Length: 380
Image 1 (tube, helix red, strand yellow):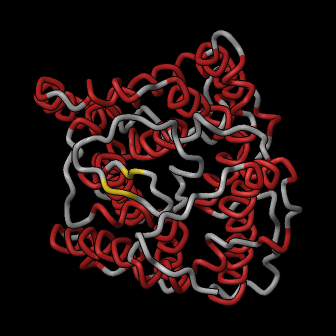
Image 2 (cartoon, helix red, strand yellow):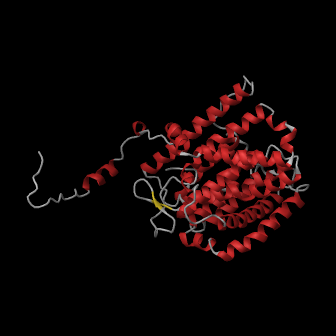
């Protein structure tokens, strides 16, 4: 099942511990499903915390989470895009799994803002992604350029140069969130270059133990740098000049933040369970939670829900955190998937020409030989 982190089956590897067969016989690795579920929970919790940034402790946690939750998603997306090429079946899955959901939900969120927030003049545009939908735009660009990254000799350095150039180019503008496309690109390209053994290294006990002081140091750094470092650097949505910084600081800060994000992503993955858990099956439905949870966040904005004094107390923050985690968990469940698969993962065979090459390969496959027991009659 296609998710923000899936879409094209990775090359077959040895069946890992905790895996299970997926539809079509492909093995699902519990580790990656667990990682996607935990990452989507952090995305939803981070969006909830983003409404309460007047509290120093909340903003510290918010900054730590924003250092790695989307980089982890993007890294896994790149890893599962290793087999992507421009064959018709892959392009079809890109359209049905990325383009169609983007068009549907961009329209839905625009209408929700128009009528839910009483903004009758709010228009519908596909060039200015709403809130979190930038990721689908980015995923389309990254996947469609995958053959380029798989062809050139040094893809990661090239992607780092493009990220740096984006950080000094305010004229790029906001169309399709191309700043984020460029500045997060190195994580996708890194995912394309990774192999299963790299993830086995991350799962080592020594890495888990080393990650504890790293998380503590990240929290202390986030607290200490709050007065000096703007959140825009973690969003990767603006150039240096738009953040009131000298242009030459753009590449330095972007490379530094990407480096910190990589370390934090490794630490996060080190603590992801390798075996099947109660939430493992939800990892296949993270696209649903990702697309839907922002309706709740926006509804809270439109109704001034986050202005309640109780939410700015420790117990209120804890309650909102639990609610966000529970809500996105429910949105990843099978009933939600069944109800919305027609717009999130539509089949749409009617919209595509049949691949003549694929049809020929199917015809050329030898038919299975029927084996009958001695004396068995053949039905006619």
